Length: 107
Image (cartoon, rainbow, N blue to C red; front, side):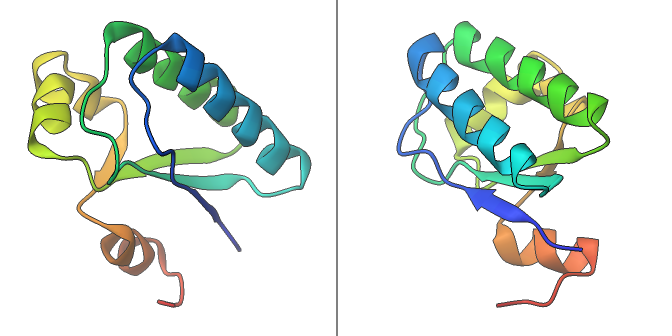
């Protein structure tokens, strides 16, 4: 089993979310169905970006895959907690925790 890490430089609005969605579609087309979005460079998200992430989660799940998040800063984590989106997503502290909890070899 393999996975792909996607690390957007930003994900603050619907426009950047469309770009991320396109990248996820390409990953799925390549046959990878486990995706980790590393948000370490994302400092802010608006509701459009969060809504787009939910849509991506549903699309990936609908194709039998999984979509997880990691490296949320405090502000983004708080938004996820207040909106209860943290209950929809598997959220990890960092890539290493994701790999350990999913049985991947740590690189």
